[in-house]
Length: 421
Length: 87
Image (tube, rainbow over all chains, first blue to last red):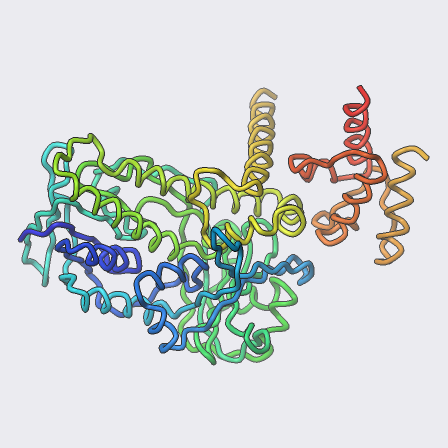
């Protein structure tokens, strides 16, 4: 079978890439092994993620499906004090910031909506498992898939998009090198969905809440519909192991110990889902584009789930990937050694900028707080929304970068001194 | 008053008097993550006071936690900023 673009994965990254590409008239085949809908976490969308949905013409459907409307995120400091609020705001080159909203979503519903919307827009959907990329030298020529147990089929493509998420298909296939470990140690997330949680009143009831305990130890609180709230705890893996509890015990204890403001919001809760746990760590792939392929979202980089950039990166990179692929097809020569290098640089810039934001938040909480509340509140609104791709960095971002760099130098100096002694 | 006295005076009037916590000694932790009296709420007024009283600019890169860790560290930071300014 032949297609212009083959996409591995039918999650938000794959489906968004498929839809953006379908607007260009290319033949697109999306390969997904799981039955949709399927469970996933990562339920809060950033402001610019909302704009990706608008660009795909899905705002009406988001509203009709009554996904909770998110106007911003509140981060509660230790002991429930010192909360800070970052509103979701849009930005217009002429008039600056304006009020807008995004959503939080039950991922099984949301992902299924994107998946079926892609199919409805002329994307071929294939229920199959990607087995291996098809290669010609260092050029990816397609993908071998396994359908229905043992039937193997080769799909020839001009471009293969890896949107396999943390499955990191091309990396696992040895195509683009090994994952490089990121800045953070392994983390464990334990989570479920509950009824009975107390939200902010009125229009604020759909907002995302984050509760900070200490470095790399926090909780999320994300409304999924009028009744049900997703709650989860993220901790260093070491901490989780040392507790030696069942997932259920761990979640119950943490929900009532982590932060008094979280305790207050969970007076009487009932779990409507099993308690689940996952373990992950930050990683990146340095070369995630090349002849005949590119990666979007988690398939090339994962930083940290705090501040909810997961779905945003998947969908925004899908948008950029589609435009980069459209230019590739429009170019009759196609002689560049890597036709997608500009796309790769753009993705790296966005992810590096968010890495600075998150590093500053964990490593320099006081400085972060001063910059976010007092010196560069508007820049922080841009960053939380996901406006992080400009060539000229925001002053607030430069401030965080300079603090992070000082911190890194000090840590290196400290470690060197340690190894000499 | 020298730098240390000015800071002690400010913290005792503006922070300690309002929170009821004991005044930290020169080497006790100042930041609330280590049990001190300065949190992310009263840190900003403290910075504004330092800038106006001593006529220095606390740069973004000066906001490193170690400059605020103890009263001694903060005094040292202000004195070095001050001498930068007048050298």
